[in-house]
Amino acid sequence: MTRYMPISIALLLAGTSLSAAAQTPPPPPPAEAKTQAEPYVTAAGRSDLYEINSSQVVLEKSQNPAIRRYADMMIKHHQKTTAATLAAATKAGLTPPPPALDPGATASINELQLASAGDVDRLYLAQQVPAHRAALDLHQSYGSGGDQAPLRATAKKAVPIVRQHLAEAERMQQGAGGGM
Image 1 (cartoon, rainbow, N blue to C red):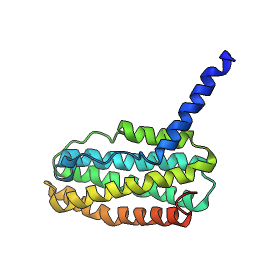
Image 2: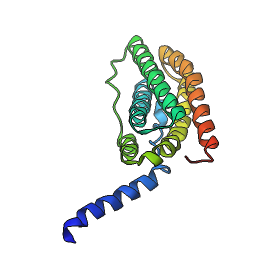
Image 3: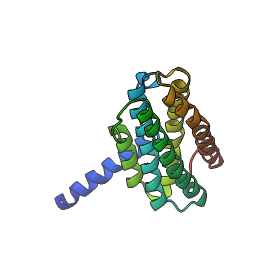
Image 4: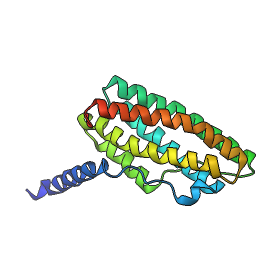
């Protein structure tokens, strides 16, 4: 029996992690990211990278054609918004580091990796909705009050894209009765 104890504990911890995932999407960006260029570029890059990486996991696991189309769209759109933000940052005289995930986003992606095929769609949408709400707030705020004109323009261009993503995620989530 002792031989199987570590596996039991690992499964228990994995189950605990998965059940908490729907309540703990990636954290919102810091307040200064809404007005200051460097924190904005970092936060936008983290957000895009989370969207890309989480969507890649879902493409590997989901069998739902609508979820797979959405995930594919996330990857394509967020690669473009990352490129646009980095170009605008360079135009504004910044030298931004490559986007990197924070621990919260990494944990959310790990939860998707550990999710069963039956749970991954529900979990993905449960993460996507608040993540896109936070991204929408970030881009709207920086677009209206940011300190660098090239980045304000890029943020404003990102707003309709993020709105579309949010609306689609909410529609799929509601269509599934709040869960998949």
